[in-house]
Image (cartoon, rainbow, N blue to C red; front, side, top):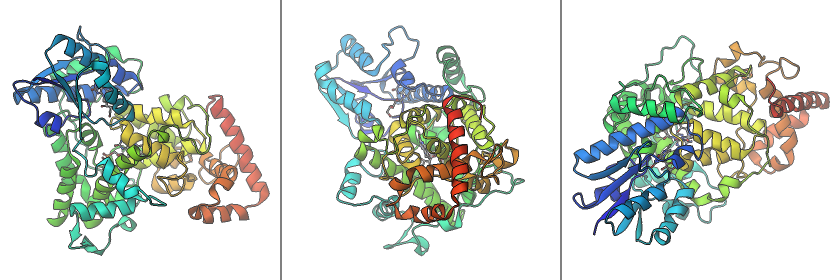
Length: 512
Ligand code: FAD
Ligand code: DLZ
Ligand code: SF4
């Protein structure tokens, strides 16, 4: 009665029911590095190297714990190139009576798994992914019948349900949310702690050589590989964050400084999303640090809200709104991505820095993703399909369940406002307030029109002008529409002209 248990690259967690309930001497765990997963979007080289190395290390751990593991490397002779074909190959060459999988992080794969039973001719059992704090069903029960979904209310339910930062029935400190104390810019001479890096062992060395030879046409730099690839090292990243960065996390959460990609963020998304860390342990560590007086409440609450609130909300949202979320296009935007999304060659320093860091590290922090690249993508009317594929491929923490709601819902408003209460658009003054990028820019943030004017300025008003009808029933846009209504027609026309010229350049892929 042997089962073949397929474990995916983002399921590297020994406590998953599919693994924990395996019969060690009977069942086989199959893990495979396959072309289909690595290339259906052309993932960043560092992302592939990170995941393959983490998968190989995880397989070794399973073997140490006496599991039977069939690990198929990318260049193995019997590699079949896709998960389905690899499972077929194992069934044809082994003696298995059933297949066990864990519910995947993508609608595409879940659909495929649901058809495997008829394709393969054996029972296929899809286990629940128990690493999240809310199931898709819980989210859908919460969302059903609500006129408007807002993360903040979901988050409060989660705090109560999991008894996190609670003082009886009330939130610790009396407030649910301490964001008012966050969002400071960072003084330029402020020294940020070094981010964690790890020695490269033989396994990672082999993987880096493999990626260099097999994925040379993919985006991204492979040098300076810094990732933790084992659970032990991922725990070290978490612990170092709690000690060195969390105390300042809240305060500098939204700040951006040229040459400082890591700031006070945790850099644990890579590990949470592939399974080396669990959200529960990250939340518990932060809560404990607050109770022991190591970190202030605004930082602990702010960090916990990202994981217990946003991360869980985003995941529930994904399954609730799929498959429509992937094709929604509220503003009907169609423009192709300009080349500088791949080579960072632009005179806009904010975009240059954020894309350059993305290329180097397969990482950019939240505000860089949201208010620089995301903001620009909406203001320049880029195709949601292409922006989604870009974000999914370039970040090492990107899987569709978490990337898509952030891109379609949060930055592009392509779902018409189910996720964001208003489009996250801003002019250059926001970027100037939260960063030092404008100092080294080919454009001037103080100028609204003309050849030297910051493109975010005229693009912002162009966006408001063009979409005013679609935005007029949104009360959160009322102030801005009022300001727009008071602007002189000449000024509006000048900005519209500059925006049109800029957008034409983007369409033609000319230098901007
Ligand atoms: P921190 O800033 O230290 O935050 C701690 C943790 O909170 C993160 O690791 C993450 O698990 C969670 N978190 C915070 N914000 C969000 C959010 N909006 N959605 C879900 N989880 C959140 N996050 C991903 O994990 N994968 C993605 O593919 C991804 N794509 C994004 C695309 C866009 C356009 C935007 C605006 C945000 C995206 N995010 C994504 C959310 C967020 O930017 C990253 O989680 C974060 O930058 C990861 O870095 P960190 O681990 O240092 O996070
Ligand atoms: C992202 C990724 C990559 C690059 N490669 C593999 C792989 O070779 N084998 C595998 O099992 N998983 C891989 N993954 C992760 C999957 O794409 C991920 O499981 C799905 O996107 C669902 O989240
Ligand atoms: Fe970005 Fe405008 Fe500032 Fe240049 S001036 S860095 S384009 S916001």
